[in-house]
Image (cartoon, rainbow, N blue to C red; front, side, top):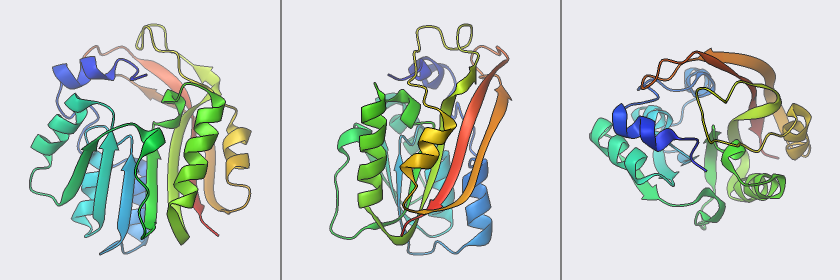
Length: 202
């Protein structure tokens, strides 16, 4: 499930722009990530991965779209990012845990609720104690998908379900707000209700 994003990646390299998402920018403004291990799951073309890399982090970026990874390598060729084409649900675990895991616009692309819960649990297991999760996902409150995302059927969980996924950890920030946007390849104004979470692992 790519949400039709390959069409956008093909038409407009840097489809998502080159500036980090708001939660990534917030964390980078507050904390030092030099030499920290960061995993960007569902990285797209890598704008968040690039921001962490510029801050001195050691970044692994994974996306299922070959086009997205190819565009990212071109856009951010001068940064030390380890790029991988692959599925988020079976990303390789490593002996040394990550200091931060980013899941920006990823979980709603999973096929069902069980897959989302499995992915979050696996990401938690791969994160160091005191490490951070940044999660942004469509939720089930209000979505305008028909015109801008034809054929895309995301898995929409309640905002509370994402809070529940981090019930054993410390939630530093959690919001449920609407995002109004248009994509550069079609300029169709639409909106999404978004869950945004920053959580610190116990």
